[in-house]
Amino acid sequence: MLKASPTQRRKSVANLLLVAPAFVVMGLLSVSVIWLIQQLQSTRCPYGTFLAGSGQAATIVQAVPILLGSIGLALLSVNWLIHLAPPLRRFFDREARQHGEPGYERSQRSLAKFSTIVLAIMSPITMAASFCQYCLTPEQILYQPWPWTGLRQYSWQDVRAVETVCTHGRRGGWNGSLFLIMRDEASFDIMDWPRSTVRAYPDIVRALDGVDFVFDATQVRPGCNVPYVNLLIRRP
Image (cartoon, rainbow, N blue to C red; front, side, top):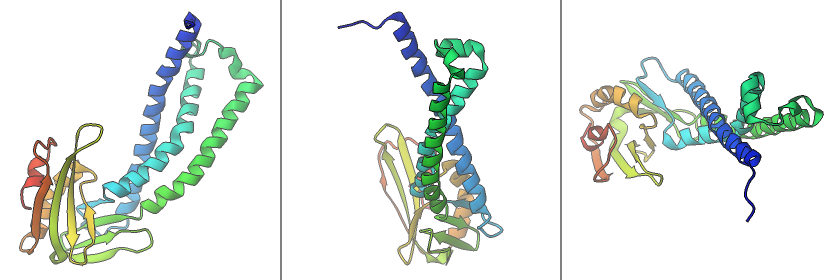
């Protein structure tokens, strides 16, 4: 079995080190897009809304296409930043002189073209998923399950049940959910951003005061280790 030369090992280590900043850029792009989507969603909610979101499933559908589409942009950004700093360029690319050659420029243009095509395909999925949302106000609940349905209006008296879930994820860690289930069987999870839900919890309790609903916490698994576990096991 042939052993890798020091140059090959150095290049492999450099390539691995490039992955970390690329993932950071991907994460920043995705978080920024989700933040912008939240701002757009808030404009569709009425004045006095104390909690708005999309639910965990819709939030994932919003984030994953942008995450995939940002791979090429992240690599381009990292390459550009490294190219601006000669010490980094010498460390990460022993053949840094190629940055000014036609072949390298063509490869970068191809990567940019690929990224643009992927984003053009993925962005409509994210935008469509952004129309799946809910708005909670002291007087009413607005919920849009699909992009084409429009916002449905409910009163808090329409809440038939509150169900909480806490399960152990496949990759470790615990994941909690709090579902509002309406009398027409519409159901949505308001725990897509736990910190926001925890802050809004007193408002939810006040809105549900006097409402005849069923509370079900049977799907909160023993050992549930999330900071807001007490919120999941007690009746609002």
